[in-house]
Length: 72
Image 1 (cartoon, rainbow, N blue to C red):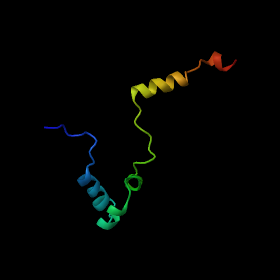
Image 2: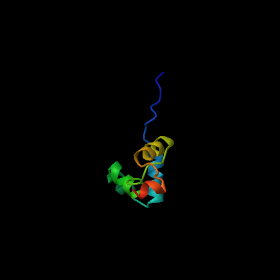
Image 3: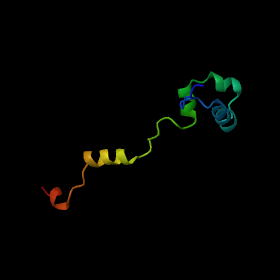
Image 4: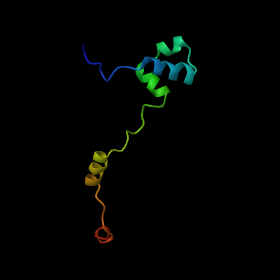
């Protein structure tokens, strides 16, 4: 028995979001590319969640400065 891939597309969920949520006809839904559907659902262009690792990267790149440091 083979393992189920974790990156499978949730077609029923996407169809509900596109057809019920966005009010698309089935024809309009299937005519969209995956990127177009993501944009219509508002998923494209959003910032990813701020993880601890990303926060640490930002803190290292932009360290806090003390008031005395700002006067220099």
